[in-house]
Amino acid sequence: MFTTTLKPRPTNRTHDLFSAINELKKKLNAVVLAHYYQDGDIQDIADYIGDSLELSRKAATTSADVIVFAGVHFMAETAKILNPDKLVLLPDLDAGCSLADSCPPDQFAAFKAAHPGHLVVSYINCSAEIKALSDIICTSSNAVKIINQIPETQPIIFAPDRNLGRYVSEQTGRNLVLWQGSCMVHENFSEKKLVELKIQHPTAEIIAHPECEPAVLRHADFIGSTSALLNYTQNSSNQKFIVATEPGIIHQMQKRVPNKIFIPAPPVNNCACNECPHMRLNTLEKLYLAMENRAPEITMSEEIRVAALKPIQRMLEMSI
Ligand code: 13P
Ligand code: SF4
Image (cartoon, rainbow, N blue to C red):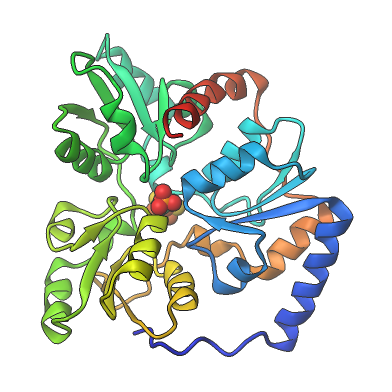
């Protein structure tokens, strides 16, 4: 359980790495963008921390020469799609995403062909190839807004996350054809243990990411993207929260409101599997080494990049 006490830091090692990374930021004219699911020390050294939408907006407007993306592959790839002439670094190239992997491009192309006349709206948690097969990209913070802007008579495929798709369908009243993908982290919360935890902490509000299964979402007092959850905990008069998303976000929640209590929602097993194993492949050391070595770098074919750019730009236009 997380308490209200902030972790003691920085250690000497962390402090040395912070100084070295700050030096490299200046030398390379680099910006470090970090998702809320990164380790706390990575969040602390980042120039910008955000949810997927905020980080794509930041990537679209940065004047830095080098973007160091502390997140997973599809996020860094999005930054590269928006910035073909910049060097985009990912501290660990193996930092993938189970949700993105659950939608192979050849199978999705066949699925799309089986639904002629459908507009394809894809969650940003997908590969550049899937983006290239899509009409509009969305994130968890703008999905409802984007679907609401599409004419009611237009049939829609929503990919790849079935849980977000189901949630958006409920919120908009639209019948969406769902690709059956999911996130290994958000599907791993235990409804039974969540209810037991709520009985132990009756005043706690349950807050959840829409990638969670309906059995978890139906207990939630508030549902939203990582940024929306963070803002909610800051603005709510409530003192205690059970957090049903990757617990990296709790680092920012504790920083913003140190007097409040945040309890990570329990996974089905007694493991740390509510931590995203992909996100957590990045470490402060790897971030430093990536900047020092100017590698590993994100690359892709220009054909895919240009095709993937269009639906991302549509998203950015539709979510102003
Ligand atoms: P958001 O950043 O949109 O909240 O999404 C969370 C997520 O799963 C990122 O992988
Ligand atoms: Fe992918 Fe889930 Fe990890 Fe997000 S939390 S990066 S959706 S596996």
